Each structure stands twice: as C-alpha cells, then as structure tokens.
Image 1 (cartoon, rainbow, N blue to C red):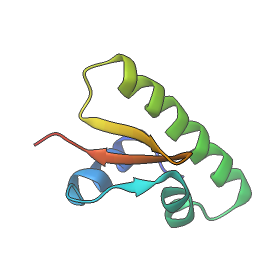
Image 2: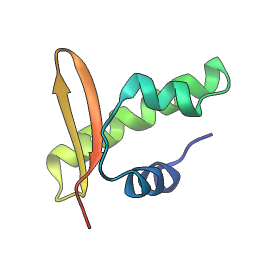
Image 3: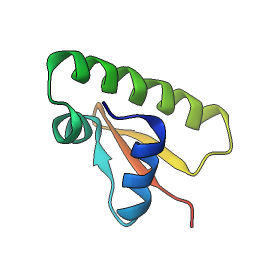
Image 4: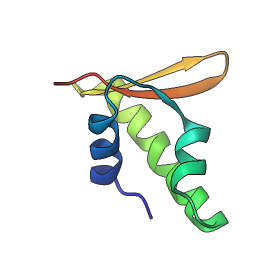
Length: 72
C-alpha cells in the first residue's frame, strides 16, 4: 500500500502536474482496503500541509482535492 514517502516521491517525479485524490487512489489502490488506507493517508496529508510549512500543496477545486509538489 502507498505510504507517505512513496507518495512524496511520486509527486516529486511529477512535480509539474497536480493529481486529484481520486486519481491517486485509482493509480495506487489494488483493493477496497487499500482504497480506504490511501484515502485516509491523503486526508491526513491534506490537513498536515495546511498547518505546516510543507512542500505539498493540497487545494480544493469544485469539491475535489488536488495534490501537487511545490518544493524543489
């Protein structure tokens, strides 16, 4: 299952793109249990990026959360 370091590595490699929560789940989840785990991870990272000086940018557009790496 996807963990924080793997997710950050994926975003760093694709730093010119942003990905919706649904895209991330569809790309990395292989089961319903993994879907729930990834959804939970992304929700935690969304909150963390709001309250810390993070290189992760999580933004909500039209009710969908998008993730993008903003660091170098």
